[in-house]
Image 1 (cartoon, rainbow, N blue to C red):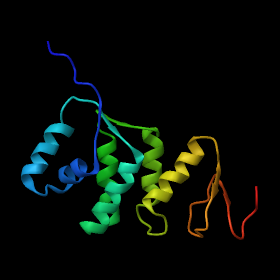
Image 2: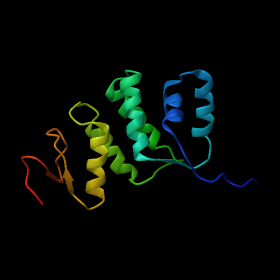
Image 3: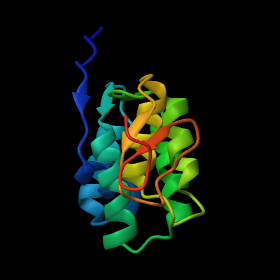
Length: 142
């Protein structure tokens, strides 16, 4: 019986190849990595970057990107670096049908809530506000 492989981080380039099948040879290599038994760690930075690449470079509709990333992070061998999977799914759902909230803002919003900080400095009037205190120009000071 062979030893399980140690955990490894997975990069945007691997996830994008896997989800787009572009180019097919790299997509096959990505599928071998992602569909294997190795535990893969996904940084929330890479999650946001992947969403950006899929929507901005590949011009994939936001809802389709959110659905694909939601399914991806729910794979049994994927572990998020700092967030619980339900929190990351909540952040993705927040920006699924609206261009009001960016992927990065949604992840920061859920990190602030989950981390117990609950306060965010921002000048962005579109920043998600539910469950956090937004601070900045025109907002309450600390």
